[in-house]
Length: 189
Image (cartoon, rainbow, N blue to C red; front, side, top):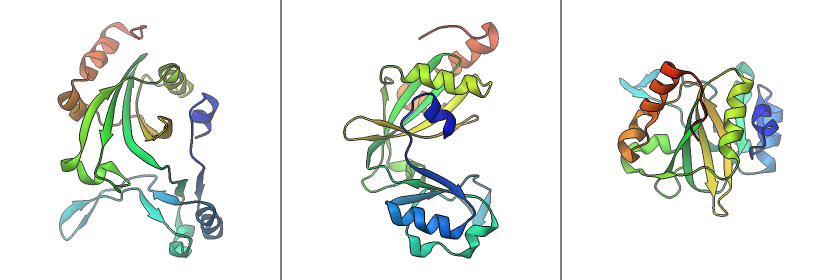
């Protein structure tokens, strides 16, 4: 989150803590979501399951928070999400529209719609700079987009999924990865 702020991305208030008191206080200050820091593999009734970002209230925070770090983030009043995949210096973005009220689009893939979009001015350069800070050439960035068209940075996954977007909206990510592997970094706007 500090690197995102440093390169000029808009970042919601975020707390990573194992202190239940700090977590309760943070949740009392604004509508908050809880996000797992690592999506471990587990099953419920023999079926694969996941922990998605979800609203959390101060009264839901108990001593279990003290067992490991947890991520709490101010809830962004989003109208859509965007997944931006950066390969070298190229950015590919898809707007993801989920059913109303769904906090985490990953929880309902069957009811999502997608459309290709262009990063706002200066954002692609900021994302490339973000990756450079970590010595990376690839990242899958997630944004929440508000009614005023602000892209709020939520996270960057250095091994994030992208292939389904190629089929859904024709983003040429695989070609960009092949170009990067074959030719190295270049400026392809």
